[in-house]
Image (cartoon, rainbow, N blue to C red; front, top):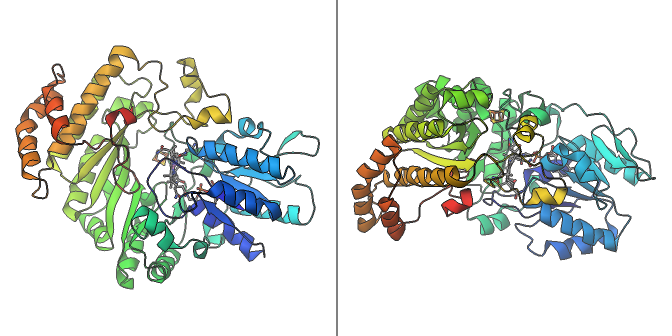
Amino acid sequence: MLFYPPYAGPPLGAPLSLLGLASPLLEAGFEVKLVDDLIAPHYEETILREAQDALLLGISVLTGPHIGAAVRVSRAVKKLRPNLPIVFGGWHASLATPQTLREPYVDAIVRGQGELTLLELTQRLAGGQDWHGVRGLSFKDADGRIVHEPERPVADINTLPAPAYHLADPGIYAAVSGSRQLAYTSSVGCPYQCNYCTDQVFYKRRFNAYRVERVVSELADLVPRYQIEHVPLFDSNFLVDRKRAVAIAKGIVASGIRFQWDFQTSTDFLALMSEEDVHLLAESGVHHIGFGTESASQEVLALMNKRFQHVDQMVETARKTSLAGIHVVFNIILGYPGESEAQREQTFRIMSDIAKEYSNISFSPNIFTPYPGIPIWPQLKELGVREPQSLEEWETLALGTNVLPWLRGEELRRLHRSLEYFLLNNQIRKVTKKIPWAKRSVRRFLGAPVRWRIGKSRYSFPWELWVSRAVEKVVTRRSLLTGRPLAERTQEVC
Ligand code: B12
Ligand code: SF4
């Protein structure tokens, strides 16, 4: 039995992690029961019922709200069937393994890519063998001692079976999320090493991608079979191999199958593409792209180990996607260690200038949130950031939770204020006929003073905020995966 706990975020269709893990198990003859909170609100009852005769309970755990239900369910299952092995996997469990395994209800952790490790573990369990020697596994042995087996090399994803899409009915997911979506991963891994990101820890900087033919033929099969309207790609950085990306787009066009798809990538790669190739992406159905732009200060980008990215590439990305009619979200990290207020204001100014020119750009600004295993932790500790000391302490660390000792008091208040202006500016520049007349007029009226304030970094007596609050709700965060709005109030961002 595999469980995907409730999370904070947009409904994205069936959890790909569990579908991927299920495939090799099914091929080996095991029965797999998936429990996803999104479509099974009474998940606890279901799990306790199914636990009666399960061989193993596997739980996927990301940092943040996922943890709460994972802990609750594990405790309840341990009470009912103390000998049922509970195995945690996924990013949080893999990046904070010793701390997670300390919990009495966790018997084992599958670190990193999970398909082959879980299969081997399940086979050992079914055969009554012990777990010593299963690569990629950390576990408690018969005497309760903790054993960390060596890492399992990341498998070429072309050698893994396709996720077991048939286990998840897209119709049921559509009822919850509002559209028939199918999450898909065409690659894992990113060659970069941004020092707030753990992709390098998980996938060792290797771009590990399906061949073009596999992507095209799987999508051409799955989309009509499940009447899919929308495919969010979960790749870390889809455009690492631009030739492959263009060939996939061509293949989709040639297949004649129509659907929308989105992906995330970095601006350096998109900026290098020709206008024709970006058009081709749009023609094949790409309607949104998420970018981790993070800052428009070259010094801050250097602090993030993001020297590969430059402001002119952001502008070029905005220009080419705008020409192609693709909607784009630029993510912004605020309060990164070493970022000065002047650099932050520079980011707001430059980003606002780009957005003024290209109306297809939206932003998703967040206070820097340090997740487990990110390479910059030693420096953060020196700066006084306290690392959560238990699995449950990590639960409260949702995106944007401000744990930064250097971002407090007056400076934090100023950040909130300038951020509100930045977001308001981003919203009021979108004056379309679809917006009611009164709102449109207010937006026109506020445009010039708001732009002036951002240009001069002057934010006292914020009358424009008071006026705008009276007439509209400002979108503060957007999903990088789909571009859709997330939290509704600025306070939820910071
Ligand atoms: C999609 C996604 C989400 C979706 C997933 C929903 C869905 N229906 O699928 C949602 C919206 C939940 C989400 C939320 C967040 N996410 Co997210 N997300 C991703 C993304 C883009 C893809 C994940 C994915 O499905 N990959 C494909 C599958 C096949 O891979 P996988 O999930 O890693 O699963 C494999 C292994 O991890 C392992 N495994 C996973 N679960 C289990 C369970 C068991 C039992 C076993 C044995 C193995 C195992 O085996 C799987 C197959 O190899 C990744 C980035 C990436 N490129 O992977 C970020 C990523 C996982 N997310 C990240 C972050 C930071 C978040 C948030 C904390 C941020 C936020 N916005 O608040 C939240 C946390 C939400 C919460 N706790 O409530 C970080 C990791 C953070 C962390 N330490 O957990 C990542 C790596 C992005 C990054 N580069 O920083 N996310
Ligand atoms: S480009 Fe994105 S995925 Fe790659 S290391 Fe940087 S933040 Fe992580």
